[in-house]
Length: 149
Image 1 (cartoon, rainbow, N blue to C red):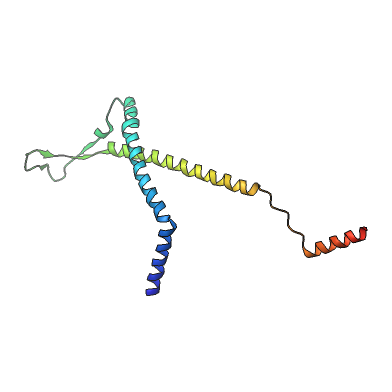
Image 2: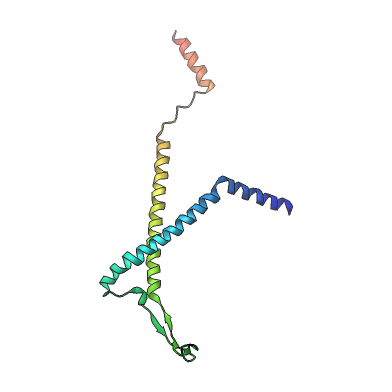
């Protein structure tokens, strides 16, 4: 058991020292900021443009009142009926944000794959040096040259 835990700690240390953990942390931080950027883009630019075509309706106000199955709930402090809503407008906004984010990530991955392919092609295009002749070929070449004299 001690060997397994020490092996685990050794692997974790190698992982942390190699920089993978730092790369992952940077990716998470950038991803979080990028998510906020896409959410802002969706809520402040895309959704208002869509609202133009839907009659200036605010998507966050798109909701359906759900019926009370066991009678209305009443707020004891105000005496008002507490209504239950299914808010699908906010969900629609989140779906649009997800699609934009997924598309951008897809384009980034596609671009990185193209760069990798270009790097591989350049390596492949470099001509390989001709293989060195074997000892038998060298010996036959020497014999041929001697016979020509």
